[in-house]
Image (cartoon, rainbow, N blue to C red; front, side):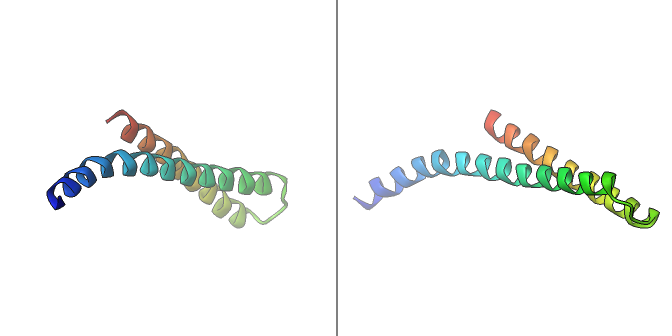
Length: 80
């Protein structure tokens, strides 16, 4: 009986964990993209000093990159 349960769990876990992993990467990617858009909008319409604008621009680029790479990772997981 235990052997059958172990086989069942061993068979079902990848089928459950994989979609959760894909969804997690998509949610994180969405959050990063939203952060990039919000802060990008604040930088464009703001009148902060140049140093803060550069730092904010780097933050926006980092968030955008993390968001895009998270979606790429989710796609890679879904294709494997």
